[in-house]
Image 1: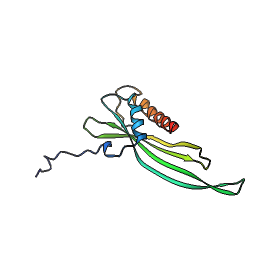
Image 2: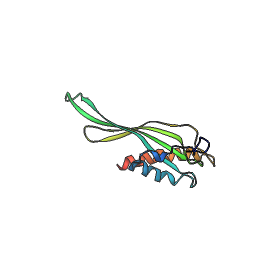
Image 3: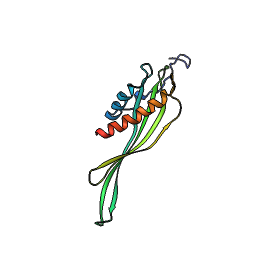
Image 4: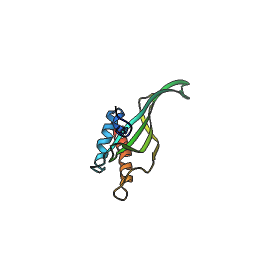
Length: 140
């Protein structure tokens, strides 16, 4: 049995969070901008769907629209083996009764933990993350 000093610390990583096609695609797109030695990993930590009744004033009928809320997190792989959460994005995907959908990025926040080597590196990564989401949403 190991005592406390001999135990290796356990650092949770983004790899402990399930992957999805959307976040794997986003991660691949962002890697084109990210540094080779410090991967950026994107994961979806929440994905909730709800159905809303929408009243149509002209015909006095109710119809249904589907709304999917997603929480997307971006991590930078650190040198000690853990991952630093540096960006979180809340999005809403809405499909109306007519089947036409639209998306809203409700909020995108950064905490300043992205470790830059070059000026504006973090801003370029953050922009690439948002663009990768918009690109994925436009194609699906």
